[in-house]
Image (cartoon, rainbow, N blue to C red; front, side, top):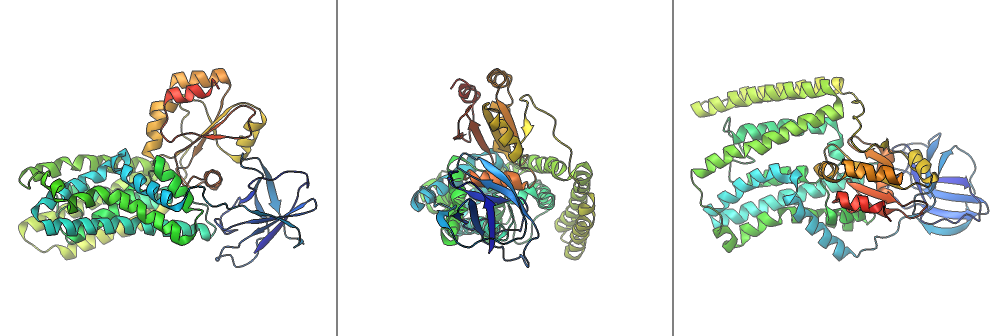
Length: 490
């Protein structure tokens, strides 16, 4: 345990205090913190992460004083801290929504992910599987269960990893996997391989994502669908994932599993309801043409991942990823040629894939670099930081703080449709609104701390601070220009 003694007048009222460490791995990030008054000294007790071998020599951070976000910069150093004092409770309140309602929200949030733009490329894989489901009722049910198992397992694995990393002191949130350039590079190569498969360049061996028509293939498709879909957050999912960071482990894992069930529910329903399956078109030659056309959204996904690689790791990193993708296509094309000729190309294919993998492990870390700042958009903004927010609040002006990421398609749609517009810019300028933009494309502990303080597990997040008001307003995750302009009239 780490104990802090912070000089603070006893007359200063505290509401939902919390200490945010400025660096990773110094405290157990999601653990409960306790606070006691000892005269004009505030005593804070923090849990140590399991990986911390010795006491830190310095512990910088921010002490949140109230739910409105007022705080103090702290730079703690080793020294004597009293143990007594009057308890004022812990900082980790239980979610205000009951667990059954949170589970329902997770189910609805997962269901909505099936119609969000970030999931559309995976729909090509689902569509092919659904078409095959008409071949046999038993096969349909087996594939439905296997697909569901893959989705739920992926969601629970990502959720467990998220909670474990946070318990170890890492300041991360939902969709943390897409903040790592190496993960994006791996997804790019996977998208290229699936595109080549859908175009008929080669056929997957077991398990196949889109070609085998087997439970193994459905399970693999479910893993991929969940891994790509989960970075998105919707209106229902945001509340459930935010609560998962506060709840005990069993309840949190139940939320992650229910999210996976929501993603898999349409496929599962068609697999088990004969009336729905009868509405599916019969298998035939049309499936070959359909499969070729479905390569288009997957190719667009690969292009988007290549762009994201440049945003995360720089242009040299992205060029290396593109070169690896070309090498992968050459290897897969050679394998497909051998498959069509009836020859065994397993040994050569494995060697080629191993060469691409080794080249990636060697070259990509050396080329990874922090990309430059993004060009200013239509709506002038300042980069979000705790000090920038404090300065803006001290000015008494209204504040619009929005948190986005290049891999979040929902964020980009909101920016295109509602935020980056001349009428919104003019209305904000007339009202003197201070705009703060939090870019969470790469991991940013300050943004993660703010998201957690607002009960959000990821982006998008939109906050409105009325002028001279102590209570901010959390805006919906789907914005309209009229709704933003109306804020300035209040």
